[in-house]
Length: 234
Length: 254
Image (cartoon, rainbow over all chains, first blue to last red; front, side, top):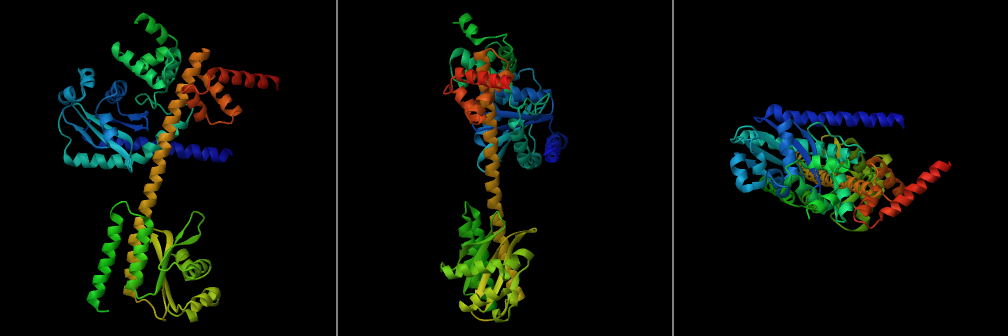
């Protein structure tokens, strides 16, 4: 029925606006430089729903590409991860990420897990350009804001995932669909599982120091075939 | 009962209820505690709690006696009686003398007297306008709960209601989380399957998706099932290609 369609569309649009407004409040009301919100699935599927700026978006992407960082620790443990001095602490805690962070202006990172009961459904990741503590009051406030954002974020992520074309934006690539398409292609080309194919994709990107999404795009657009890549580097 | 011991007993009831609420509690256990304590406190001889289901009907969830006739009595009351009135109005209903209750409750009155109940109080389980059921306390002698007792009974019921609604919320949140997991994993599988087909057929992602969908339709499977089958190779890409060609042919012949 057309009327219902319109109503559903309108309520979805207002829910989206409400979610984005909650995200914007993070940057507006906390002493931070920026941040991002992402939802996670059971098998480490990750959907970046919002990011405030290029740096937040890069921090999100680096952790996705490298498979390590405070974000992963937060989703795995369900605990708040406070990194008051990222350049210093990363060298021991996340050595690969530390290398990639050089020359980027990220001094401190605070990751608030989003949980529903016992399950981990995502994170609110905040960064500040300068190192230093966030302070107890701001930590408490950010934790409250993260709780408020949980259901809207999960709703948004679920709806986006169900759509043929997800709700991706300039800084927030949603599920990075092209990466999974590329993993599927590589899995066929090499006769391996999709999980292994994703690891290959990630490893190749790391080896030549290019973001995973760039390699994925090369694969999907037929500029790169992993079968030939294998022949070149036996 | 002396005033002091009454206060002590009431306090004990609140502590017991709060205790039941602390960790992974069972709603039935919570309601059992509520009704047992209330029957004790307010000198009733029997009691029970009814909770509304998804179709707005009241069902006996716990009672002080498992006797079928007590349960049936309350169920009858849920049709026309003080219990359903408390449920619909959200206000406690006190019946000090069952024998003098109105004609519209004739069935209820007959059954109450047959079972020896002469007075009754029905207290709504409610929180901010939402009414989820009632607690019913039955006494074998006529008389009415005084205002203090009524307030105490309502307060106990309120504590239990918060517990029930919290448990319900946490169950709903579990469902929301499951839906997220399902949606994210489905999408990843579908995109991977599109990639597999795209590499196999040298087709673009849209064409791959159409092939995936037409296979799902012709085999009456969900997109997710087909995607998972393509990704783990339990569905051979050649079968998907054949299915897509057949769908094209039938579309062309129409």
